[in-house]
Length: 255
Image (cartoon, rainbow, N blue to C red):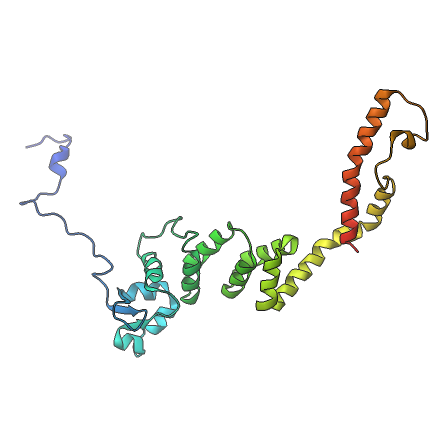
């Protein structure tokens, strides 16, 4: 018998067991599946899924699987916007504790965005936009942002194309979404406004610069100078030439 206040040995606190039977493991997603997702005509392109998991994650699946709906009666859901392999990645992220910061990658972001947007799974969709904001903006990314309602990514791509849009990006917009191209043009005009307001000041600055390189003798109105003085003035005039060229390009852009 133990005396009062005596600490019980750790070994005595372990659950008693009469044999070496292992504790049962938690159920897998396959074990709790009660519906089938079909991705084509062949039964090979199908996968089992759990209806409760789908309904908790997606309002779209919730409507499909309500009592009385065809999908609920037949326990079969047709998936047309993704392949089986793409949907398996998406479905795997719906499981408890399955989510992680690196779950969305450059390789799967396009398919995960399309699936999560269609089935209205906001957590995965937000993660997709977060990753896209770190990738180079292009005309294709701009159209993608517009299609799936990614506001931050859309505005970022508009601004970038307005600043330095490549010819192929602008041509893509002409063919696909002329209205979006108009937004890019409007943004370009907004970016030009500060420069337009400074046009007179730019012209005034340019007037102080020589039209091209001039010799130190001309710059000093023929005054004789020492060799060090002439060399110093030559360096100054040479250094002003790039500045003059920059002002010339800015003025040409403002025409």
